[in-house]
Amino acid sequence: NAGVTQTPKFQVLKTGQSMTLQCAQDMNHEYMSWYRQDPGMGLRLIHYSVGAGITDQGEVPNGYNVSRSTTEDFPLRLLSAAPSQTSVYFCASSYLAGGSTDTQYFGPGTRLTVL
Amino acid sequence: GDSVTQMEGPVTLSEEAFLTINCTYTATGYPSLFWYVQYPGEGLQLLLKATKADDKGSNKGFEATYRKETTSFHLEKGSVQVSDSAVYFCALRPNNYGQNFVFGPGTRLSVLP
Image (cartoon, rainbow over all chains, first blue to last red):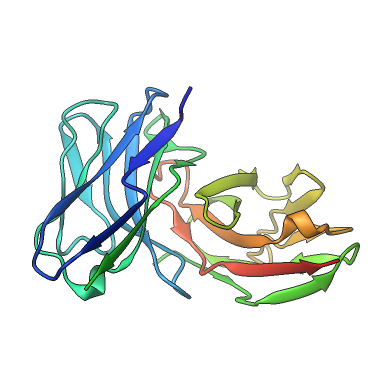
C-alpha cells in the first residue's frame, strides 16, 4: 500500500494564480481531511469529507475549495492564491467506525509559497 | 471549544536524558488522545494513543497516560536518542462520535550526542 500520497511536494505561485493540490489514499478510508501547518500554530483543519459526495468546512476554509468524487481522491483547490496561504499542507485519512474517526494517516505534505 | 495545550519548546536534551513533554486538554465528554511525531521533511506519524481514562499508550519507548482528573496526557521517555529529534504533537478526537481532530502547537525536540 502506498498509504496517503500528495502532489506536488513543492509549489511556488504568484498572487492571484489558482492551483490544485492532489491527495489520494489506497486504504479505502471514508474520512479524508486537509490541514495547513504554520509555525507555532500546529495543524488547522481546512476541509474534510466523510465519503464520496460529502464535504464540509473546517476551522479555516476561506480561499479553498474541495470535492470528493471518489473514495480515493480529495483534491484541494486554491481559487486565487494570496501570500497568507503560504504554508505546508497535509492531507490525512481515516476509517470511520460508528461515525467516528480513529488514527489519522498523513501524507508527506506540500510546501506552498505564494509570492 | 475543544483545545490542546502543550509546551512549545524547543526542548534540547543530551542523549540518554529523560524526556517529558506536557500536554493538557479541554474537551466535553470523553475524547480520545494521541501523540503524533513529525520528523524533518515528513508528514505526521502516529506515535501512541489512549481512548479512555487511565489507559497508557506506549510505542518505541515512549509512554503517555490518559489522566482525566488532571485533563493531561504527558509524553515521557526514559532515555532519548539522537534519532528522537523531531516535532511532537498532542491531539484529541472529541468524544465517541467525533470526527475532527484538534492538534496542539507542537513541541520541537533536539537531542544532542
